[in-house]
Image (cartoon, rainbow, N blue to C red; front, side, top):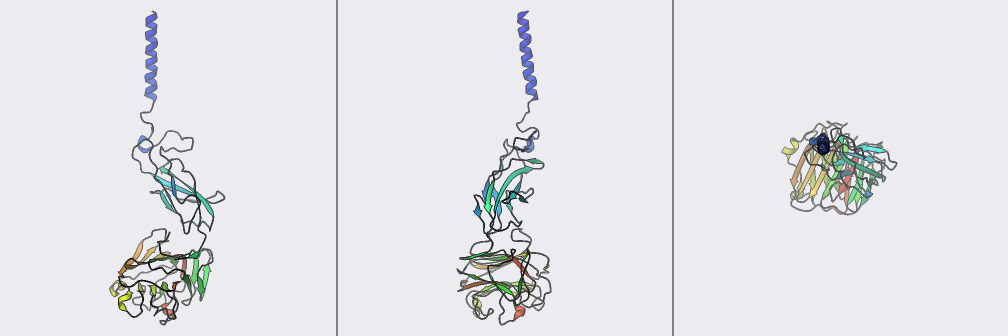
Length: 367
């Protein structure tokens, strides 16, 4: 009798252990093992079994010279498997108020397009998500937003949306609140004196107000030179054009670059006539366009795209010309929004009604 009781007790213990084991999950991430999901939220509120991303840039109160692009390491699933992860970035101002939320992005980077104000400390964080499941937030990183415009060495940055410019306003111009500086006539332009000549670099900007069938001839969107007595004959003249109704053809995009002489055709670089004839665009004055001119490394190139510089919009125009003879070496080096009036007259100068912002000129690409 005593032995049978021991046997019965042992059977009951084995049975209870079997029941307990059958109630345990077959996977450490069940339910939803295939997608990293968990049954209950963790103490940090996360429901997705992934690691927290690590902020990489900008961090440690880095002082920025332009709009920030936030970059973090990728998150990893804690228990293996394959899941399509998205990333959510959040940015907070010095008072702790949220000023930007990226939504679900396919990559662990986020170009911030919101206005952050100038020279203000911001913090940011990022987490991985998958549908309605969310991973843990990263540690908090910080940066200091752009100090505003500056001219320093071989760099110029001029946001213009804050109602001031680091350049010199010449002729009729005015500020449009929150948008930038407007050329009020073809006699108005903004001039930048660059302390160190840039022999290879980038000149890019955002602009709105360009319109189809505007008055003008070889109208200039932006330009560079030595600021000599006549812009047209300046030996280091650069002009990027969106031609008016008197242009050939009207509404075409083209450019001309001189590498040291207004007379030596071997130092003149521009798209040929066939390219110019095929480069006609009906631009919308209500659309923001990014224009970028690059020079050096054996070529000159102009790119025109829809949207802001950080938006990566549709490219409308991308034309390069080989520039293998001479060097772009203006002494001194000046750059312009629009252009000075040369012997061709005001009809070949700036374009009235155009509004400029986020100007970058430098020996390195736009940051």
